[in-house]
Amino acid sequence: MGAVSRTSLAMAAATLALASSAFAQIVVLQARGPSAGAYPQGSVLAPNRVISLRAGDRLEVLDAAGSHVLTGPVTMPARQVDTGSKVALQDIFKRANASHSGIAAVRGFSLDEGKAAPAPEATPLWRADVESWQQGEPADPHNFCVAHGQAPVLARETATSEGSLTIYSDATKATRAIVWPAGVTELAWPADIPHADGQLYALNLNGAGATQVRWREIPGQASSLTDMARAMLDAGCYDQLDTLQSQVGMK
Image 1 (tube, helix red, strand yellow):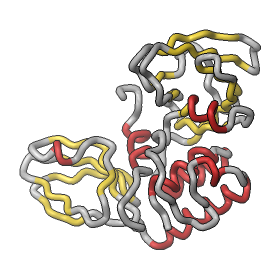
Image 2 (spheres, rainbow, N blue to C red; image 1 turned 120 degrees about the horizontal axis):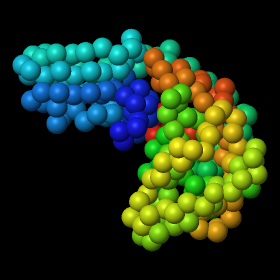
Image 3 (cartoon, one colour; image 1 turned 90 degrees about the vertical axis):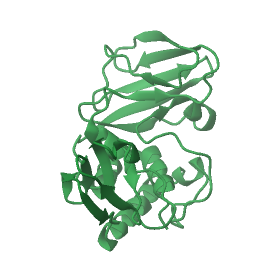
Image 4 (cartoon, one colour; image 1 turned 45 degrees about the horizontal axis):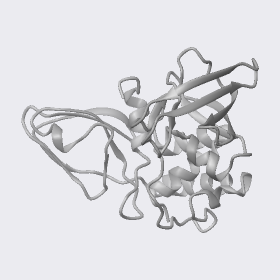
């Protein structure tokens, strides 16, 4: 996690599932002091959560107004996203569905209904699930958004044994074979392989068949969940928008 910036952590954390139709607005960037254990880095504070800080506590958070610091002692309620933001997000999800009609079937819910159905825990927003793509949509290229200044991270669910990943560059026609160690579910994109906006690669895990990914760069700064979702929509990152809606539990 060291290579992941606080901004990317906050953006990813803002997509975690909530128990109700309300959206959490406060995301923890960093916590220090006696109460730090109650506020893990990257966690989303539910709208009904009461923030209680003691003397010596320092909590850096991201909300609709941007990032700022809370210091103890203080007691205050966490807030939820305003109605206008909910409406904007609903519009983004509907536009995504209209642009990519197959998106709703990927994780078992309908964007048209605007309602998430119970489903297995999804891959985190900033992890490209190679194994899932191979099993579900091997022939379809995937646009996958990466925040500026960060590197892609590949993911797989089956990690009991060592894996073999072949990366083929559409631009250079070069092929690279990489060992995916046993017990490791996440693999950082090789530092010497470009992942600039628009770069297209074919990924083949364990010889199960290649799936294509096109990396799309989006701004590393996001002042709200709506801004982040809009950047993904503009970049055509429909898989991540699918994940985003299922995780926030929007109705």
